[in-house]
Figure 1: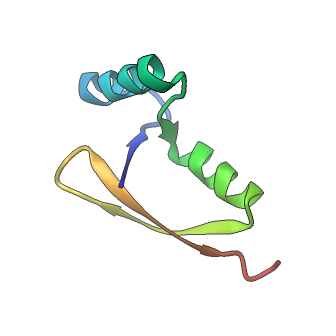
Figure 2: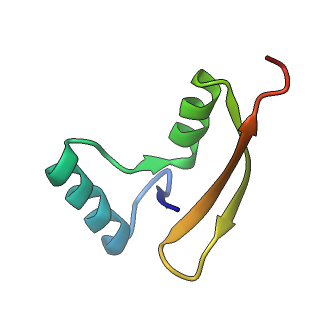
Figure 3: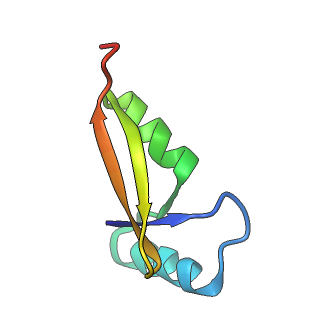
Length: 67
């Protein structure tokens, strides 16, 4: 489960998660475009994003069949 940031103008709750992650780990939350890029570089592909009632979502990934 991950918080997926919108491409532009994150709401206060998502921006708060992003800042907490940055302060705790020096990393950031990602947009869907950033997730897809990360998966592609690792030989995976995003199959589905299951949105939850909370701020999070479940990223369903699979191996890239072209590899």
